[in-house]
Length: 309
Image (cartoon, rainbow, N blue to C red):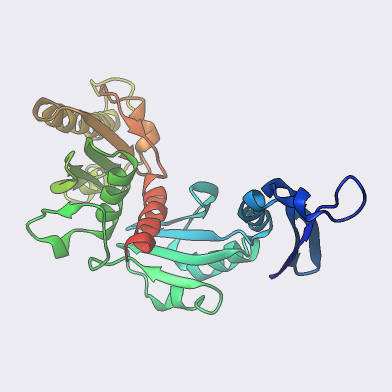
């Protein structure tokens, strides 16, 4: 980017330069030349508008930076490309597709400047470091700066995914008591009070694990896949399993919410994870549901880290 400018005196009405007539600041102008590659702009500007004009030009001509966030879960990988706080596109893929999928994402979004990773799954870091020549790669760890005070008794054992969710809740919903419920392979409950203290929560099996455990730890119960029960009274073995798993899942979450509500005011519930949309329609409590909250929190927490490192 090249800049050049010069100033000149505005001519008087008589067609000659009259130094007495230029006493007013409005009659002192700059000729400003901005060169961005092959594009050149030239225009006159008065002193009080000088910096404003430069800022406006830079904003119009800057190369837009994007961030690729990746959440490596227990089952699948979720990713999203952000421009600022705006999601440009979401992706879901299997772990064995990681390098292939990221390569395609970066081919499509060539302005990505950073790859930000939160991982609880078994993926080697080298799979991400393959892309170091194209952009900066960041892995969130317990040593990073977070916008809450971690009061967990065993802070090093707290999952990075839960820390990212807590950070997102803290940043997005300030000065409130927040309960984040992530309904994925496991259901995790994370509570951050209105003073930004992370106090802990709970972990229990998700829908898929409940179906699998009934099959693997009994002699005759079949392995079923998720299905909304017709009634809470199951009139067959299959319907009894669906009723027990799905209704038990919903009742558990509502029970936890009721307990928190009874003990805390100024309260918000954030529901996320793969089963968030299903749950949002069935829980009796009013909630804020966002299935992409972890990826959005990952983007927000990375921005917070940049500002506070």
